[in-house]
Image (cartoon, rainbow over all chains, first blue to last red; front, side, top):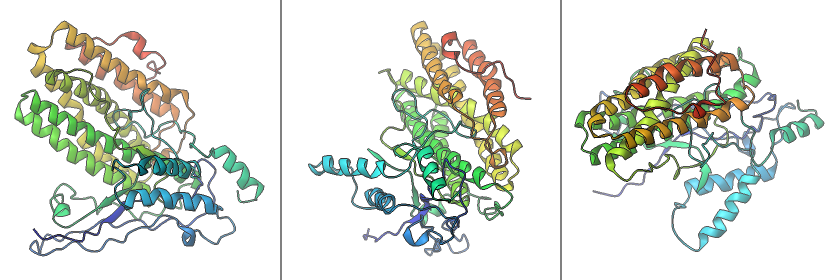
Length: 157
Length: 269
């Protein structure tokens, strides 16, 4: 079988609006994705059409509106580092670089307001899907309450 | 290893395989106007639906493990096939919730460990490994999911959320049954020690939800997020009649301490 240069399509990406946990400011959300469509009428051909790959909020994606949230350069850089870990060479190799990359990864996470799923006492996700209606959890690494205070100072709420 | 929870597709023949199972997905109102919902509700909903996508992803991993254990245990092959099929169901549910999160503005940064999706069974014996996973995943997890998703669907004002939840609830109802069918098949091989252990497994799984009731409510029923009263009522309506009682009928008793901290006196109105 010939090797393929595969292109994947983004189904779900992080939007770093940083409004989560605060009363959100007005923002233009990323375009909703169109999942790869397949045509059943021509099964013999490669019929998967191009997907409008949605992008996360990158620097150029942050709206110019005065009500927009200011996402710091450090946060955007951290998100890029985290995403590189996903799309770059697989991080699952056992090499001496793992310690350094893990340190870098933890530093990046500490700069991005983020969440963790609800887990049991040993860190395994709760069974089933009972997140709907779940009582909200505070973002880790960058407390939402601190971030909201900063927004209020800047008159962005 | 931690990473952000994001998803991708490769398409081609691998998408075509799923075309039949995905029938109706693209016809859902993905572009419904969001102006009627408050920004605060939309932001809360991004979090909840991103987390829901991850829950479904973890459920896919759980049913994958279950299928392997059922094979090792020599379980009836149609039960094995069903468990494998449920992996596909859960992957498709992941897609649906992911698309909901994107339609609301994108996923929130959710730090996950994909190497730690399923609590490994403590038992060594294949039959008991299957039993542990099924009690935890199906008899507890999926049984709790159904009334909560139904309540969310009924309270939501969003046609998209209603359509997505209707589709998902249809599948989850089957997922909630397989555990009890397995227990009925395995019954002749389960000793009192096994049943006692399974009672602890079920009790621990239920008790792990107690942390939810210590938090504040996110609200936002318009977008499928239940308020406290709705959530607690849906939860309470499932625990005793649909988990504790059916397991007890099969000789699996859940200790009362496991139910501490849960709002079991509230019923869905």
